[in-house]
Amino acid sequence: MSVTAIIAGAGRLPGLLVKALRANDAPVMVAAIAGTGAEDPGGVAFMPFHVERMAVLFDELTNRDVTRVVFAGGMSRPALDPALLDPGTAALLPRILPALQQGDDGLLRAVIEIFEDRGFEVMGAADIAPALCPGEGVLTQSAPSEQDQADADRAATILSTLGPLDLGQGAVVAQGLCLAIETLPGTDAMLKFAADYPRRPDPNGARGVFVKAPKPGQDLRVDMPVIGPATVAAAVKAGLAGIAFQAGGVMMLEQAETVAAADAAGLFLWSRAL
Amino acid sequence: MSVTAIIAGAGRLPGLLVKALRANDAPVMVAAIAGTGAEDPGGVAFMPFHVERMAVLFDELTNRDVTRVVFAGGMSRPALDPALLDPGTAALLPRILPALQQGDDGLLRAVIEIFEDRGFEVMGAADIAPALCPGEGVLTQSAPSEQDQADADRAATILSTLGPLDLGQGAVVAQGLCLAIETLPGTDAMLKFAADYPRRPDPNGARGVFVKAPKPGQDLRVDMPVIGPATVAAAVKAGLAGIAFQAGGVMMLEQAETVAAADAAGLFLWSRAL
Image (cartoon, rainbow over all chains, first blue to last red):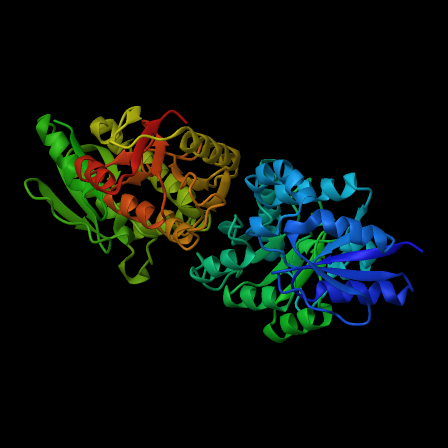
């Protein structure tokens, strides 16, 4: 029977996927990327590998009847150790090195293509565990006001305007004014930037909304935006009223904890069409 | 003979304009906005006024044969003191208060319109002292490399894409990747943000370029982007290769000092069509 391999980086997602697959009695194993801090979720085969030895990994996966792979968890840009390179992976470098210059998206696209060329089906975490992506609706006790909705609309317009430039997974808007746009340093850096600017034109008016969505054309199989309790904490520090995100386009790994953290802070979480 | 009034905020610009006008024997006075830290440049009539007493200001300007006004210098958003309001200015509040919610541009547009309605011609600082806006060319010993030019092009594309949203006077791009986009907190905050992210995909590659330009439709009479030695210092801290800006659309008040600071740091300053 065909086996699914979780190509695992840091965090809880790989373990959650193992759990979801096992709940369906689907055969699963974990191939953990060395250096990412990927942890053994237990209960299934666990095989660490070095990115420098990807060709060796392909053979091992095939030997274990793996036909599908799912990339999951945090993967920082690797520093390659030439001493570890196997000949097959060395032959792939002409494809990988240019991609390294093209941002995370370019690198991930190149890696997906290499897996696909070797005959593996590359699935998204949300395909395997759709419950990880909240559907449309307000998840919290607090709900967006009219001004919050207008702020969310403006942030969404900023993101859709920037999308064709392969830019902008997130933006913060308060009282119609853009406080921050997500760039290379990422969501946490952007929310910290917004936290350094607590002033609002009307001090008693809307506090602002953080909107998160995938970029148009972003490959959600390997790079789906994620929010969780840490995102809520950062939004609270930034003094925002809430977080709006694209229904079906953003993962929430720890939904109960995330909603509880938002409720405790009076923040809204709003999954909506964008 | 018709007098020009400099409506003065903080910084050196009001004094530079007085100097430029006096060099042409044009009659000039300074109306200093209270609370901005506007300084008396000396040599001409100096009249501080409160924004709450704008109607009184109009009468005084007319009494002094003022027909043209030039807004110059730093003006932070005012906190209005109702106790100071004169009846004429109170009558203007229905126009000013909604504009306060629309960002700096909206507020400035409203103030310009009020001056124009009262019969004053509103001029731009660059109209009076065109030498303050560098023409096209590289001003420094260091010149942009091909990669720097590509980074500047990408940043310019980001700005022109955001322009229709009344957003984006500046952006930082390094090796094709967007590090930061200017939002409400302004240029200094953006460059500080970029400085917190010194990593580059290729550590030996291009360091990045800060591009500054007015937004399309921005009223350059009251809100022309400015760069100076502090901008250079911030760009150096951010580890950038240089600053590119729109020729004719950005003011450089202290050109000699700014170029000297850039040369001392090996930074380029590139005035170009954008």
